[in-house]
Structures are given as C-alpha cells and as structure tokens.
Image 1 (cartoon, rainbow, N blue to C red):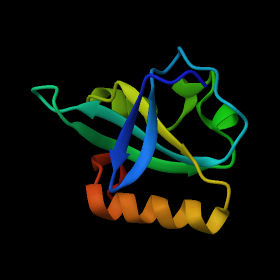
Image 2: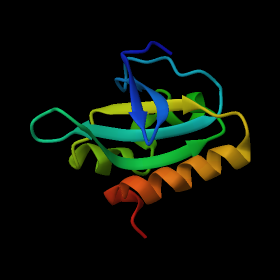
Image 3: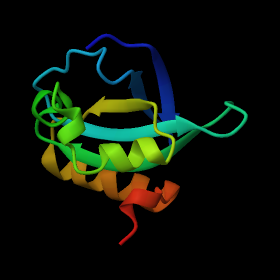
Length: 108
C-alpha cells in the first residue's frame, strides 16, 4: 500500500490512500471512506467498515463495494485504513468510530 498521509480518528492512526492508486495488501483492518469539509481543513467520515482483507474488499473492484458510489456522492475522495489483526478489536473499533463520527452511510 502506498501511503499519502497519516490521519487520526478518535486517537487511532489511519493512513490515507487515494482509491485506484493503491495496491492493497491482503491484511485485515478497519477503513473509512472520507472526504474533507467545505473549506478542506477537516476530514469527514462518509462510511466506516471493517474487512478480513483490504485487497479483496478495496482492491481493483472498489466500484463494486456497496457503499463506495454513495460515499463519492457524499464527497468521499480517500480511503483511510488501519491494519487490525484481531477480529474482536476490528469490530470494536468499527463500532466506536461509527458511534463517534456518525457517518451518513452507516445510519441504520
């Protein structure tokens, strides 16, 4: 994965990637479809998810992800990713971030 910058979400460090310009590794983790606010100063989460494999979930088929097109319509331009090996930790982090940042595409 080629990184562009590190971003903090709730004190957790994520790496920011441009979709389509990243070779995703076959590792598990949490990801955030994000875009900046209107003045470009702050990131806003559009969708938060977790996966067993960034390569399988976010690889060349990113357009097949059920939320990517909606996220782009909501202003997503980047994917922020954090490797989290442990399944329980991934699910907990996903839940905590959704609860903290209330992304529009995670609304139930």
